[in-house]
Image 1: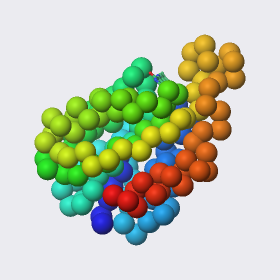
Image 2: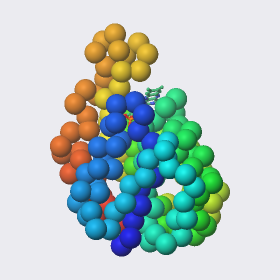
Image 3: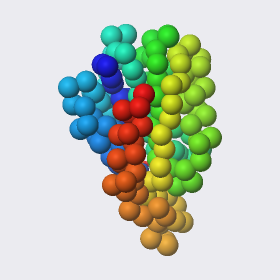
Length: 147
Ligand SMILES: Cc1cc2nc3c(=O)[nH]c(=O)nc-3n(C[C@H](O)[C@H](O)[C@H](O)COP(=O)(O)O)c2cc1C
């Protein structure tokens, strides 16, 4: 299945670790794209599109949401990946909203905790230190294989 994962991973590269693990598991079929450096791209030739981000103030990264709005073709199957301090399933709502607006289909999501040193958390050495773990990266790959 020809797949591309659009990602934004600005804080510690936590989410990029999920993206890299999935790409490494199927390098022939999985491409990855950093939305901070990519220009507009025709995504119509992909069977599956992943959107991956850290969570910043409750939302997916704005650069990813904007890229999705501008480039997601209607009718595509889209899967969601994210890392966050809280790891709540509802933290993907901003991405789901764009997926819906673009008349695409959300086909699943995987999330796990990600090391966080935002604001005052830095003073206590951060939260979710060591995440994503090897087990969480393996679980992300299993999630992808199950799609
Ligand atoms: C500016 C900022 C805001 C954040 N806001 C939230 C938040 O609202 N909820 C949460 O669970 N984590 C929050 N976090 C923690 C990040 O989502 C977490 O560290 C994530 O793994 C970062 O992913 P990245 O390294 O791929 O950017 C925030 C981090 C930063 C830097």
